[in-house]
Amino acid sequence: MRRATVMLVLVGAVALPAPAFAHGGPTVPVATSFAARITAVPGGLHAAVVDGDQQLWLQAPPQATVIVLGLAGEPFLRFTPRGVDLNERSPTAYLNRPQPEQPPPSAGALRAPLWRQVSAGHSYRWHEDRLHALAATVRSDRGGYVGPWTIALKIDGRAATIRGGLWSVPPPSLLWFWPLGVALLCAVVLLRARRPALDAGMTTALTILGLATIVAAHAERDLHGRPGLAAGQLAWLIVACAFAVAGAVLVRRPRWRALVALATTAYALDTGLTSLDVLRKGHVLGALPPAFERVTATGALTAGLGGLLVLLLADRSTSRPRLFDRPETTL
Image (tube, rainbow, N blue to C red; front, side, top):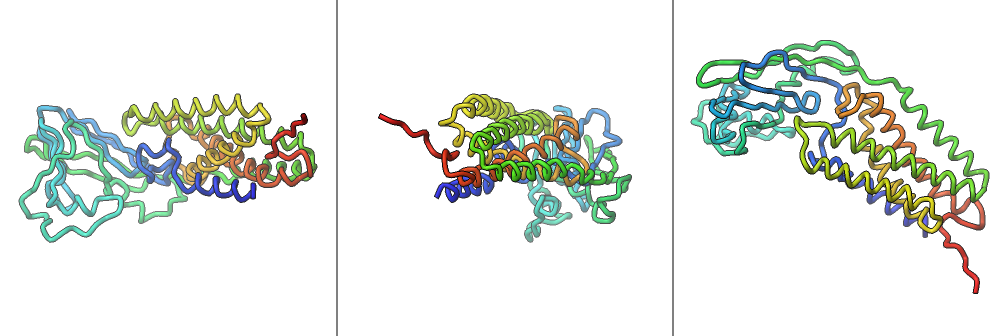
């Protein structure tokens, strides 16, 4: 019964995305195989690539009128002193989405624009297929320059262009998975020793590791600008730090150890699975160095999977005392 409860809690936790990564939506990538870079921006504009090769962010001067042209040269986005507008009759508005949609009959490159305001500010970020259109022509495991890309504009009626290139980034070494395998093998060996004190020590150690990697993963994601930082990102980092501090204090108390271990295992396992692309793809998207982020991902998977092994097996490694049993009291 206890093992069934553990499995239900863990499955439920992993089925939902960790709150720290939900501020940008469930599809926010942590790593990509390609990196788009900007090489030229017209004077007065500021542009940045977001999420490796997925989105483009553009900021225009408040007094200027800047029109971003679509795939067929039609008006797609418009930056004006009043804000940013999207042309709902632009085929690009539908084809250029993360999940492309068939443009409705009312849309067409030659139709008069129908503008809808999407921002009251002077900057906007959107999914841009032109950044990674060439990715389908090469193998992602071969690093190097793939080719150029351009985004056509009109600035106060004058033609202009944002230019850049796409680079392929080879995947990291499989050696990053070795510490995970070694740690899990050691956990299995130690569990076979059938010593409750050793099981409790492993539980505490894996919980501390999990708490540390949870905070590190939040720092990597929540301090990563897209292109700037949102207040919600810092709030989730504070919540993660508070969770880690509370967990580190309570895990040392026998009556709280199992509950804290269960919560940390679920959180660390979700964090590790969410960060799995960091170990599979070459271009890491985060605020800290790629090597540190890969160490964090490996540590989170170790804490999550190792904690799962201990929680499921430690309470049957010996007859008594058991990890999930409350201490007996005598009158």
